[in-house]
Image 1: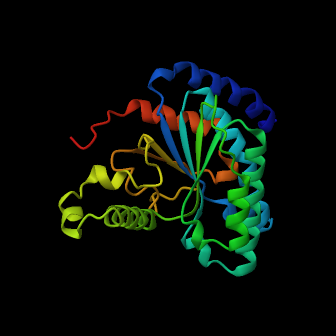
Image 2: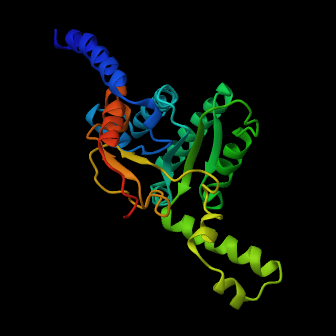
Length: 255
């Protein structure tokens, strides 16, 4: 009986929340830390791989919700640099699920998919499979989806500074000149998200209330929303609540 009531009431509540949102003020860039797959699996007496597969199925739902409220960029943290230290069999299973997910997203040809992370840190077979999955056809697609795989916030900043130094030094500039022109705007040009708006809203599932280095450089002025649900259980209702919370805040941008 309780399940029947939920199936009736939740859609009504979702429509009510959506109707109250001012879509012209929706966040343009939403970052999501997809956390809790393994704990979801444990609670459901399932394998870790089953948890990752359940989380993968949720991604398409999230992207459709983002399109519905006019979000332009979504960044999904699918695999951190720390995750690469997991036991070999578990890591291979996770990489396989992620590769299958990226291939499926690419086949749908609905979104601009962008790989974001240190691919050189990934298993070679995995990195090649990811790169082969991504299409360069970005025409007439409203939503850009950054796939943060092999991603770490500190690693991104390190990579950006290295790329910046290499470019300027290779062009013949002296180190003194490079250092004298070093500023926030210049470094930003070499971040993985260069050319994109910084995230307005960052959502983390599973109840953990920390960013763990996600979009460390870009999230200086982001709003954060922490949801208790494990990622596979994340609902449209939870997403709309995050947007409602975002809309209720006054963004000061550090002032």
